[in-house]
Image 1 (cartoon, helix red, strand yellow):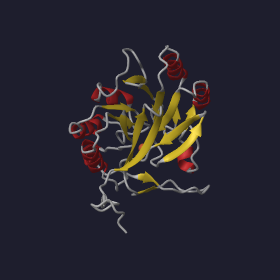
Image 2: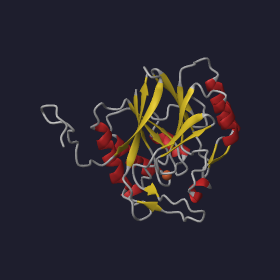
Image 3: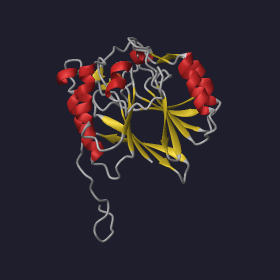
Length: 276
Ligand SMILES: [Fe+2]
């Protein structure tokens, strides 16, 4: 099972540049092309939020246009830049929530593992929240008798990463309860996958790996100073490729750049001798 995680698209209507600088529509087109031409091809794509920049119908129409070219099944959860209603209306197949659900929480059956999407959006606010309803749903889902390994995916990470302006807008409300729910099942939960911070970051939280993916567009500037300003940098766009290895019974995460770089070159010549 190979899962491509693409995050923080920030698509603007009419191909508007994000922050008057980032051509996010072209960035998404390049990321789609990259996924389509991967060998082996990922089994699915998870978009972990900030699909739009303002969350409007027009933005999601442009995302629809671009994703028409994606040849891999895909799923979405919202980020703080999204709006639930327009997102759900635009992508009903990519957001398989149960009838009557107010939030975008759902389970994907990915063969040997289950993928559990969580909606951390608090509309109009940059920080994330998991209210009692959403946490109750998670607890019920994890107690439903299906004991396969599972992976949670949620836009906002619940940890401080040392980048001050992003830490202020991490998952705040509900993070403590989430930690209790996760740590009580740390043998079963393989990882928590997040976006939001626009950088690749790895840690352990509540007893499980917590992995933040870089953006396929712009990255947040790496600035660990106490008074570091809110800023972004045009570092290479990238995605995460999560590979479930059934034999080793573990999830492995690779960083895959969207752009093509020089290579690959062989290490050995045609006689099998190391090239020196
Ligand atoms: Fe974002």
